[in-house]
Amino acid sequence: MNGTMMIQPAQADLDDSAEQTRVVTVTVNGVPHTAETRVRWTLADFLRHRLKLTGTHIGCEHGVCGACTVLVDGLSTRACLMLAVQAHEHEVTTVEGLAAADGTLHPLQQALHETHGLQCGFCTPGMLTTLKELLDTNPAPTEEDVRVAISGNLCRCTGYDGIVKATLLAAERMRKGASA
Image (cartoon, rainbow, N blue to C red; front, side, top):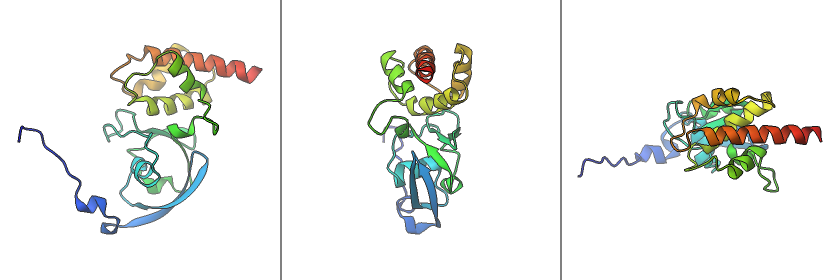
């Protein structure tokens, strides 16, 4: 070997019969789901592997990077730190749930696209859900408010300036749309 360790999933990780499961009912992006989950699965695992919603990215698996951030009952939550069974009877919004049913982008998504606030995209789902909560609770954030809100989301590409600019643009557009 060349010093690189290849990690293969254990058969127990691939076989649902190897451990206890529970049935959970959770509303994800407005759609109720009742599904079986392993008791040790995180909400991120459940979303990605059971519901096939792969927009929630898994980065550090310690709650540090913010890539797995989703909204649970409207509040930013690290999906890698919450067990799927804890989401039972709760409402979860993932990045897939931000755009309208007709495919119209959420104002945050549109502004990030227009201002080139994205680069590799790995942090984007967590940034978007975090910023949606911010704009839901503070429709007129300052630059400092945005920077504080995303301080728990790591981005290695953008330097955050484009993300801040896009958020302020989205907030302005959302305020104008609300007053129209």
